[in-house]
Length: 386
Ligand SMILES: Cc1cc2nc3c(=O)[nH]c(=O)nc-3n(C[C@H](O)[C@H](O)[C@H](O)COP(=O)(O)OP(=O)(O)OC[C@H]3O[C@@H](n4cnc5c(N)ncnc54)[C@H](O)[C@@H]3O)c2cc1C
Image (cartoon, rainbow, N blue to C red; front, side, top):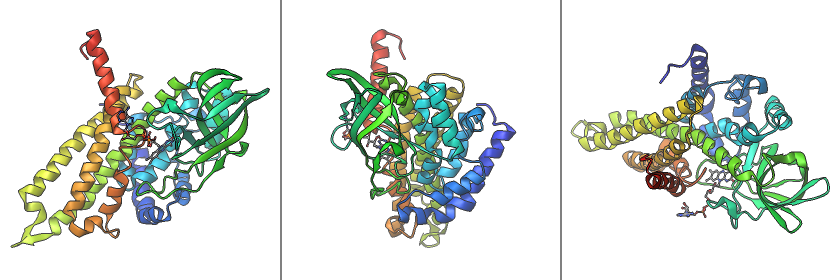
């Protein structure tokens, strides 16, 4: 793996400093508030932290994925959900980056970044579409000047603050079904957004319900062609798993970091400390081994993305092993804290709550495993021996 440049290292240390100085003191506050951490975003903007992975001509810093994941780990070890909100737009604006026209890139990336705005992805629906993305009920009907969108989405990350919603809808021209299509729908076109619902974790990532009650948009809202939504969606979902992987591994790093002093301090009997027992050393050593393996996968995926290599399989594997690890690690670590592991005045409890989300978003662990199986089985059938 190559070394980071001095420019990249400067960005990483600026993010690490920001996490220590600004994020750390307010982690509990934003968790309890169950709201988007606006002041954190304002402070991050002053330090030039958001949007760093976008090209310079669109308002970013043109930073490599390798640098972004290194910085993301530093921040997510302090607060995974807050870091998720800060990095979110790299994934949410992906449809425009890969399939948008120059005009769409100007409006929904360049201008949005200049305003400090956000995008949100609307795939999941309360009654139908979840893992099966194509079971959508949201409908886009062709009109004279464009499209009318009717539908109801839920768990829309950043939905309470987004200026644009990338909506997966089934497009129809009269009785003719044109197929799944991605539309960029401006918030002010008549989108109705609920409050942030109560979740057990990732509370500062708002995930409201979003309704489209006959919202009218022009033809210029279509991203990547009518009926061509699936490849845009799948590429975007793949890409989001890099950011998802970063925050999950940062969360695990942070949980281990929190517990280290406790293992040294806690006397169990006869002057022996918790960390002196072979049982605890083996539990923690196994978690450290799994963390090292998952981080190697993360850095490999980031470097391959920078080199333009295919990474879909690496990102599915990363998301799966990282979320399994985070759930196991935060549970084992909560146990090591004794009653403090389930008490809100101690850090392990929030880590445990946050970790529970990670095997669900960006495709559940079952979906990642099936992705990997299908790829492996198809290679085995074709004799490519992958
Ligand atoms: C923190 C968070 C943020 C989110 N952000 C967004 C967002 O920004 N935009 C958005 O659109 N959605 C978002 N979601 C929703 C998320 O994408 C869905 O929850 C996820 O895709 C799973 O869909 P579902 O919850 O409907 O579960 P279902 O699809 O109903 O699955 C239920 C269970 O069945 C399993 N299952 C499903 N199909 C199969 C199968 N074929 N074989 C075996 N098992 C199967 C699943 O793995 C799961 O365990 C977010 C969720 C969370 C928790």
